[in-house]
Length: 169
Image (cartoon, rainbow, N blue to C red; front, side, top):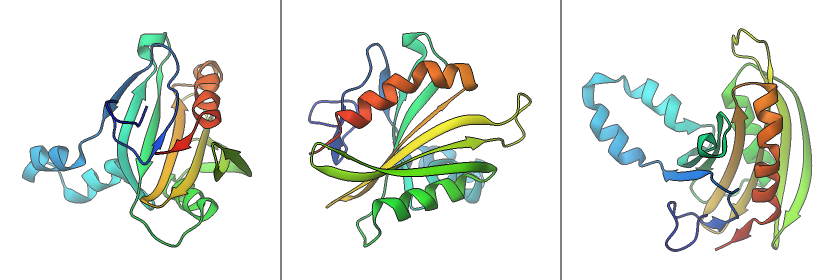
């Protein structure tokens, strides 16, 4: 995913888990279609998280799971991967227990976080994971979230496959 001819043009590529379906998020089109019907701040809150904006999402439903691996991209700048990732998690709100670590894949060095999200969910806080790398074209964040803890655990191998095959374009 991410390379020429893929569903999403990204500054990185990675292997998408079998049967997951990727779709580009066209923020310009969504903003234009929303027009005056949707408050600009609400739309921005959906399409932007911290320093990055939605670029692509891979749906796990075709693989039998309820959740997404979302890809967020940002403009070039001076922030390192950890700083980008901390801002991403902080912008989500209702998070706790963030544990950060560094990783290297395909010549890229990045930061990864495991945390819990509990924004008023009836089942309580659920686990989530994200990673960030910084490319010459800007930061890239991959985020895995599922319906609940069981779905998250079932989808974790897809996140790890993406991380372990991550390469700059």
